[in-house]
Length: 147
Image 1 (cartoon, rainbow, N blue to C red):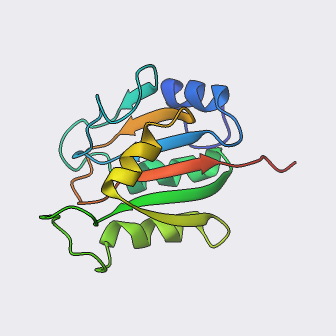
Image 2: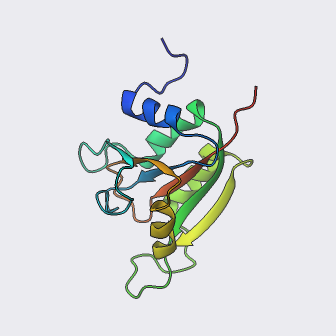
């Protein structure tokens, strides 16, 4: 039996196949799950219903299972009509920072830069959540395991 909380076979398999520098996308319910990443990326759908599960709930389990070196979030910018005005704090992000701690690097990308990063060859896993918050997507970079 595993000693940490992550038990999902698909997520465990994708993380085991990933390595330092690979990325994991925790996507909100608004993210284009089928077209927002390159073909062949492992996809795990945990979006049972709106609001279940949230990105925070998945992140809480992942931080226990895999070393993380950096995180990127999607922020408004460059597109007319974004729901959140540029420069306003985004509620989901504060929770992510608290769960990740001060040693994990942090980057903010506008929507299209985030989409480009999520379509990278380094993306190993997309976890689709039911998170309904705007700009709740989180792109994690796997770090090096310390002995």
